[in-house]
Image (cartoon, rainbow, N blue to C red; front, side, top):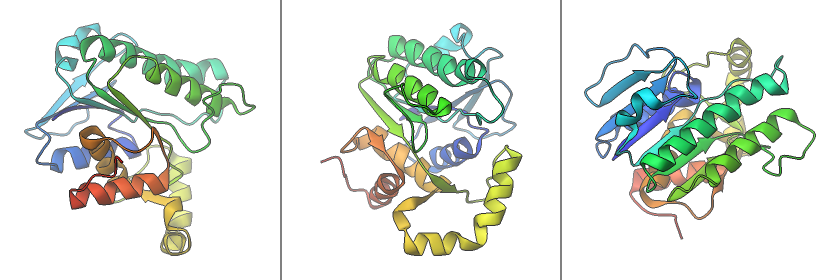
Length: 231
């Protein structure tokens, strides 16, 4: 399988990239971002694009891919809706339209978040914009699309968030994560599980198109066990 990871420098993207590089069934991992990752691996092809809404310079690399794991995201705190939309919607739309033209048989997996509003009419700005981004992916014409809407994600294997506020939050919550997992196991997932679940839906699909933490954990277990939960 040949996969694309967008946003591989972020917390979720780091976890997804790790699982893709470790998976023996993944032949090539193409990462696309504004800056080099600074990572080397025999499977890894790292492409830098200054303007992520213009992918014309890397279309040759994008062609022939089986799945795209779109993990790019920024916090909406302190941003206007226009600015947040440029990052969240416009870049997603550019990838969706370009990849659908080059690889109509591709599976596109988009990371939004719990509470995303795909009606695009709700009162919460980030949720409306994320919903619009989900909808442009759904309408692009791919073989399959899956929307990952995680809630709390526990970073593993030394992975950290680039956002300081999130790093502080994880430090504060870390002592009680085990208790959260015990009392409400479907409310917590991990960066490893997100990566495994993405590989699972790319290979075998899933029973539904919108997947939250509990669904992600189920898919990750299925991936490790080599069984399907697509029906």
